[in-house]
Length: 219
Image (cartoon, rainbow, N blue to C red):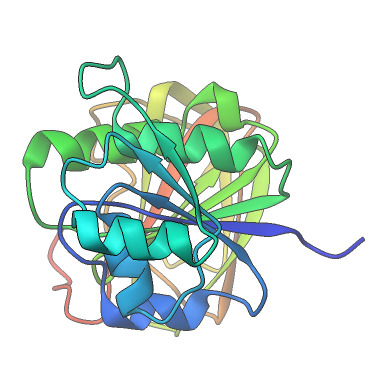
Protein backbone atom coordinates (compact mmCIF):
# COMPACT_ATOMS: atom_id res chain seq x y z
CA UNK A 1 0.00 0.00 0.00
CA UNK A 2 1.41 3.43 -0.91
CA UNK A 3 2.16 5.99 1.76
CA UNK A 4 -0.63 8.50 2.32
CA UNK A 5 0.80 11.84 3.47
CA UNK A 6 -1.07 14.87 4.78
CA UNK A 7 0.88 18.12 5.11
CA UNK A 8 0.11 20.61 7.88
CA UNK A 9 1.38 24.18 7.47
CA UNK A 10 1.58 26.05 10.77
CA UNK A 11 0.71 29.69 11.35
CA UNK A 12 3.00 32.23 12.96
CA UNK A 13 6.17 33.05 11.06
CA UNK A 14 6.69 31.45 7.62
CA UNK A 15 8.37 28.03 7.43
CA UNK A 16 11.77 27.65 5.82
CA UNK A 17 11.51 28.00 2.01
CA UNK A 18 13.21 24.62 1.49
CA UNK A 19 10.46 22.88 3.46
CA UNK A 20 8.19 22.84 0.42
CA UNK A 21 10.70 20.62 -1.38
CA UNK A 22 9.72 17.81 1.01
CA UNK A 23 6.04 17.93 0.04
CA UNK A 24 5.18 15.07 -2.34
CA UNK A 25 3.04 15.85 -5.40
CA UNK A 26 -0.65 15.42 -4.76
CA UNK A 27 -0.40 15.50 -0.95
CA UNK A 28 -3.39 17.00 0.81
CA UNK A 29 -2.53 20.20 2.68
CA UNK A 30 -4.10 21.49 5.90
CA UNK A 31 -3.35 25.11 6.81
CA UNK A 32 -3.49 26.37 10.39
CA UNK A 33 -4.74 29.97 10.37
CA UNK A 34 -1.99 32.14 8.79
CA UNK A 35 -0.50 28.91 7.50
CA UNK A 36 -2.95 29.44 4.63
CA UNK A 37 -0.87 32.40 3.45
CA UNK A 38 2.39 30.51 4.01
CA UNK A 39 1.16 27.48 2.07
CA UNK A 40 0.05 29.57 -0.89
CA UNK A 41 3.38 31.46 -0.86
CA UNK A 42 5.16 28.09 -1.07
CA UNK A 43 3.06 27.14 -4.08
CA UNK A 44 1.04 24.49 -2.23
CA UNK A 45 -2.59 23.70 -3.02
CA UNK A 46 -4.54 23.90 0.25
CA UNK A 47 -7.35 21.44 0.94
CA UNK A 48 -8.60 22.80 4.27
CA UNK A 49 -7.84 25.90 6.35
CA UNK A 50 -8.47 25.48 10.08
CA UNK A 51 -8.50 27.85 13.06
CA UNK A 52 -9.95 31.09 14.35
CA UNK A 53 -8.35 32.80 11.34
CA UNK A 54 -7.47 35.90 13.33
CA UNK A 55 -4.00 36.08 11.74
CA UNK A 56 -4.78 35.24 8.13
CA UNK A 57 -5.65 38.05 5.77
CA UNK A 58 -9.44 38.23 5.27
CA UNK A 59 -8.83 38.84 1.56
CA UNK A 60 -6.68 35.72 1.28
CA UNK A 61 -9.25 33.65 3.18
CA UNK A 62 -12.09 34.90 0.96
CA UNK A 63 -10.11 34.23 -2.22
CA UNK A 64 -9.17 30.73 -1.03
CA UNK A 65 -12.77 29.91 -0.15
CA UNK A 66 -13.91 31.14 -3.56
CA UNK A 67 -11.28 28.88 -5.14
CA UNK A 68 -12.70 25.83 -3.37
CA UNK A 69 -10.61 25.63 -0.19
CA UNK A 70 -12.69 24.34 2.72
CA UNK A 71 -12.66 26.86 5.59
CA UNK A 72 -13.27 25.46 9.09
CA UNK A 73 -13.60 28.37 11.52
CA UNK A 74 -13.25 28.06 15.29
CA UNK A 75 -13.91 30.53 18.05
CA UNK A 76 -10.96 32.63 19.22
CA UNK A 77 -11.60 31.46 22.79
CA UNK A 78 -10.78 27.77 22.43
CA UNK A 79 -8.88 25.06 24.30
CA UNK A 80 -6.39 24.19 21.54
CA UNK A 81 -3.96 26.05 19.30
CA UNK A 82 -4.71 26.36 15.62
CA UNK A 83 -1.88 23.89 14.94
CA UNK A 84 -3.44 21.30 17.24
CA UNK A 85 -6.77 21.72 15.47
CA UNK A 86 -5.01 21.29 12.13
CA UNK A 87 -3.18 18.17 13.30
CA UNK A 88 -6.43 16.66 14.55
CA UNK A 89 -8.03 17.47 11.20
CA UNK A 90 -5.11 15.83 9.38
CA UNK A 91 -5.36 12.74 11.60
CA UNK A 92 -9.06 12.46 10.77
CA UNK A 93 -8.04 11.79 7.15
CA UNK A 94 -6.37 8.53 8.26
CA UNK A 95 -2.94 9.16 6.71
CA UNK A 96 0.06 6.95 7.29
CA UNK A 97 2.24 10.05 7.74
CA UNK A 98 1.80 13.72 8.69
CA UNK A 99 4.42 16.26 7.65
CA UNK A 100 4.38 19.55 9.60
CA UNK A 101 5.93 22.71 8.16
CA UNK A 102 6.57 25.31 10.86
CA UNK A 103 8.85 28.17 11.84
CA UNK A 104 11.46 28.02 14.59
CA UNK A 105 10.91 31.70 15.34
CA UNK A 106 8.11 33.56 17.06
CA UNK A 107 6.93 32.84 20.60
CA UNK A 108 8.93 30.39 22.69
CA UNK A 109 5.82 28.97 24.35
CA UNK A 110 4.29 28.22 20.95
CA UNK A 111 7.48 26.50 19.80
CA UNK A 112 7.65 24.32 22.93
CA UNK A 113 3.95 23.48 22.65
CA UNK A 114 4.47 22.49 19.00
CA UNK A 115 7.33 20.10 19.78
CA UNK A 116 5.44 18.49 22.66
CA UNK A 117 2.30 18.22 20.53
CA UNK A 118 4.13 16.18 17.90
CA UNK A 119 4.50 13.36 20.42
CA UNK A 120 0.85 13.31 21.51
CA UNK A 121 -0.59 9.83 21.98
CA UNK A 122 -3.50 10.85 19.72
CA UNK A 123 -1.16 10.46 16.76
CA UNK A 124 0.48 7.22 17.90
CA UNK A 125 -0.64 5.30 14.81
CA UNK A 126 0.70 7.93 12.38
CA UNK A 127 4.32 8.66 11.47
CA UNK A 128 4.95 12.30 12.40
CA UNK A 129 7.68 14.37 10.73
CA UNK A 130 8.31 18.10 10.89
CA UNK A 131 10.43 20.84 9.41
CA UNK A 132 10.82 23.48 12.10
CA UNK A 133 12.79 26.30 10.56
CA UNK A 134 15.95 24.79 9.07
CA UNK A 135 15.75 21.79 11.41
CA UNK A 136 14.11 18.44 10.80
CA UNK A 137 12.35 16.39 13.45
CA UNK A 138 10.48 13.11 13.66
CA UNK A 139 8.68 11.13 16.32
CA UNK A 140 9.89 7.59 17.09
CA UNK A 141 7.64 5.21 19.04
CA UNK A 142 9.01 1.81 18.05
CA UNK A 143 11.56 2.09 15.25
CA UNK A 144 12.44 4.41 12.41
CA UNK A 145 15.27 4.80 9.93
CA UNK A 146 16.53 8.38 9.59
CA UNK A 147 18.56 9.72 6.66
CA UNK A 148 21.26 12.41 6.75
CA UNK A 149 24.76 13.11 5.49
CA UNK A 150 27.60 11.52 7.48
CA UNK A 151 28.79 14.06 10.03
CA UNK A 152 25.34 15.60 10.50
CA UNK A 153 24.18 16.22 14.05
CA UNK A 154 21.18 14.52 15.60
CA UNK A 155 19.63 14.67 19.07
CA UNK A 156 17.29 12.20 20.76
CA UNK A 157 14.90 13.71 23.30
CA UNK A 158 12.39 11.82 25.43
CA UNK A 159 8.83 13.19 25.37
CA UNK A 160 6.05 12.74 27.92
CA UNK A 161 8.00 10.26 30.07
CA UNK A 162 11.05 7.98 29.95
CA UNK A 163 12.08 6.47 26.61
CA UNK A 164 13.17 2.94 27.55
CA UNK A 165 15.32 0.43 25.71
CA UNK A 166 16.71 2.96 23.23
CA UNK A 167 19.05 1.47 20.63
CA UNK A 168 20.82 3.16 17.74
CA UNK A 169 22.78 2.04 14.69
CA UNK A 170 24.75 4.35 12.40
CA UNK A 171 25.56 6.98 15.03
CA UNK A 172 28.97 7.84 16.49
CA UNK A 173 27.81 7.40 20.10
CA UNK A 174 25.62 4.29 20.14
CA UNK A 175 22.86 3.65 22.63
CA UNK A 176 22.40 0.00 23.56
CA UNK A 177 19.15 -0.47 25.40
CA UNK A 178 19.42 2.69 27.50
CA UNK A 179 16.71 4.83 29.08
CA UNK A 180 16.52 8.52 28.17
CA UNK A 181 14.70 10.66 30.70
CA UNK A 182 12.75 13.85 29.91
CA UNK A 183 14.90 16.82 30.88
CA UNK A 184 18.17 14.94 30.36
CA UNK A 185 20.75 15.99 27.75
CA UNK A 186 22.06 12.40 27.41
CA UNK A 187 20.84 12.11 23.81
CA UNK A 188 21.97 15.55 22.60
CA UNK A 189 24.49 16.09 19.77
CA UNK A 190 25.06 12.61 18.40
CA UNK A 191 26.59 12.33 14.92
CA UNK A 192 25.72 10.34 11.80
CA UNK A 193 28.54 8.03 10.67
CA UNK A 194 26.53 6.67 7.73
CA UNK A 195 23.78 7.94 5.45
CA UNK A 196 21.11 6.21 7.55
CA UNK A 197 20.63 5.63 11.26
CA UNK A 198 18.25 3.13 12.82
CA UNK A 199 16.64 4.25 16.07
CA UNK A 200 14.42 1.96 18.12
CA UNK A 201 12.98 1.82 21.62
CA UNK A 202 10.93 -0.60 23.69
CA UNK A 203 8.62 1.89 25.44
CA UNK A 204 7.97 5.60 25.31
CA UNK A 205 8.33 8.36 22.73
CA UNK A 206 11.41 10.02 21.25
CA UNK A 207 11.66 13.27 19.34
CA UNK A 208 14.62 12.95 16.97
CA UNK A 209 15.95 16.35 15.90
CA UNK A 210 18.39 17.13 13.08
CA UNK A 211 19.39 20.76 13.84
CA UNK A 212 20.24 21.70 10.26
CA UNK A 213 23.25 22.64 8.18
CA UNK A 214 24.26 25.68 10.21
CA UNK A 215 24.21 24.01 13.64
CA UNK A 216 27.44 23.91 15.63
CA UNK A 217 28.96 20.68 16.92
CA UNK A 218 29.29 21.58 20.61
CA UNK A 219 27.35 19.53 23.16
